[in-house]
Image (cartoon, rainbow over all chains, first blue to last red):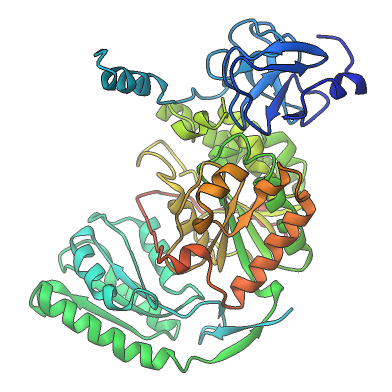
Length: 120
Length: 396
């Protein structure tokens, strides 16, 4: 927050991450980044805690809970938790300022659990 | 570039020459589908499943049956449904198109109706083969755009490239339509800034606010589970990506399904019903949107997909634009354009935009799209209700 982004910052972000507007606090993955891999975000070495899929977002700057998430230079929702540089930014830490988002994550987790004989 | 189209008696020009076979209630669906089967390329199945009367469905069916790509129409009625088949048949006949109605309860049931329907199509196709041809150019075209199966790549490759193609089409005099106000939530102010007049700007804002209220009441945004898998987290984020399809031209007007834009330019279609929430989700799937743009005259549709939709459409060709290279590789038999080349650095947005523009001309000139070659003719029409648009929506 409050820091002006410089050209150096952008050079020091992994080339697989695309920043769409200089105002943005998230970047988009043009290629998937596997879990456990080390990659550069805003000059920092980050170890990917989870796989960052194609089209998914990564925080370029720290984002505090309640703060707007900016992509394309405009707000795309609000953070629901504090987000650190390099964190995956998705349903678990941001939400719409308009209508809730629907996903099949819970159903899928159950289904995979059943297939693995874990039951519900 | 000029190309050969089909001249209709009502003065309109089409890029395809198909027979529409329309069932007027779900109970006539099977019979209508069987009638189409031996002539699947030349005869396309459309219809309305409901038994209760609805002005929107009536208008949509009238518009679709007189679409410029349609050369003749066979109506298939059960006999006791509420649909006003007399008014529909008269509208089609008045447009100069050959039309016939088969009433299953009168014809003697399933088998005889199918036989009579197939015989009618055979006779009609012989006549259609001699349809008058006419020279057309880009400015004669009405082009719609949708995105479906969107992901985090749609908004950075396929959609902005389609926006470039839209800019070029508008510059060259075509009529372009973008839609789904429920997927423009969060974009209302930047979109309003592109309106031709301040009054139109207010109408554009109002249409998105209406969509936001409508979807809030339903409890879901226009957002599918696959959108989230593809990296999209919120409706606003999906909206910004979808909005890019509209390009950067001035917005000439706001229309509702079935309204025909008066001249070339860029138009937003308001697809969210007016009044209280009555009939469920505004567009229950992508083809509902394609159908509404066809009712407003769209000769063809540009369809951007990230997750990988395979649909086409009855009556009007669909050009599918893949937003990312991995999906393109997996579904290349279904995709017409690989906008994923933008992500791999193999093409620029402008290059893909030009490729889309050129593809529009080729398809208008008769080249089959991937979905046409695969026999896709999806169609869906459900209940809605709209108030007519006000004068501020189409400023002169």
